[in-house]
Length: 464
Ligand code: ADP
Image (tube, rainbow, N blue to C red; front, side, top):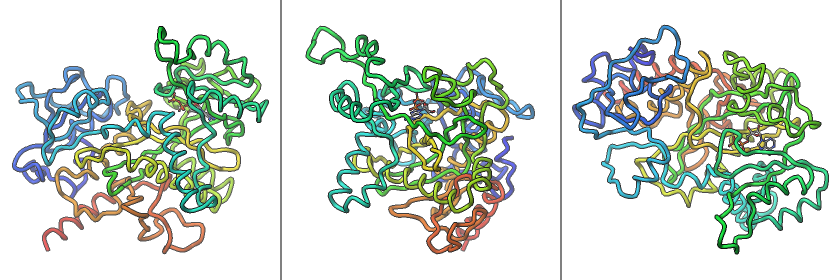
């Protein structure tokens, strides 16, 4: 039995009582991934697996399961392949979405054109557009609330504008990133235009030259030269955001997450050293002195406590509020573009970098944040994250639909900002509960206790 199933009042041991909107049968799921997500799905009472593309491979091969985790029953092979819930990969969705018919109850990961937010060039294009519109309609001051992404240009299409900007700011550092790659692949830093000559020769060919392939799209971005350092090392923060609907926009923010540190002390002397400048786990795990158990990570809770002690509660509160602003503005920038579909949901992994003034900068948004665990703590975080995501989606129909918090997820936006009921564990800077947003990133996450309470409340509401 999974950990989740042990929460009293939350899921019944009698599978019949776990059936909800699906009707009088178990919930059938498919999953393309082989990590924590599969453990969560296989361990969820009343859920049963139907064969997916990777079903024969044992789960969690790459992840670290706690030693007491019981092995799960084999996958039934006689299923008709139909499903109620599909954690699919993006490629599968792209290939199948346009031709598939979804039944009323079916839920699937990813919106059709999620890349509008998760490709680096498109994210910035959409943010620039909403910023301009805001300036036109609401003025310059309001538009300043978009000052959270570093100056960015798409290459090769904006090469000439970039060169103009480059000449205005000689000596600063720029970072080049392939628009559609991840895990730090293809990234490099440079100070002089001639440093990108090689890249230009290889990649940037005039589009008029029809004999060549279209060059790979890159973004060139102002490098944040003054990151906040802890113990002399740079880090960024992974924030999990769940969108269940774009119209109306409904957004949940997970209170857990982590900071990913680089392995080597920060310095601007060696800009070619990726172990210094890129905080991706995929990069850092190749560093010679990388410790896989520690994984160069701090929980967001640990980070919040540390920052509050060092910089004061008010400043830290302001910083977390600025992260809320990043989340909402970025989602609003694609709200009218994303093909909204009630069957779809998205769990984004936001990468946010803090500078030495505690200003958060949006670096990128991932549609498939890693769900492979690097250690026991990481496993527990991701297990809770995904379990609670399924609790929010509530295919079992056990909740009232009015909840503002479900496990570790807090409702941040529902066609407008959500105000907190109380101050819970993170005291607001101004001491007033009235205008406090329902946002608890890095706050205490007593998810199991909270789940017990809301399931009991929902039960009695439904009975009455
Ligand atoms: P990828 O999708 O390959 O992970 P990212 O845009 O997330 O690419 O960049 C990888 C890492 O590089 C980030 O986690 C961060 O540490 C660093 N980085 C990226 N852009 C900047 C920037 N503008 N300023 C400072 N560091 C950056």
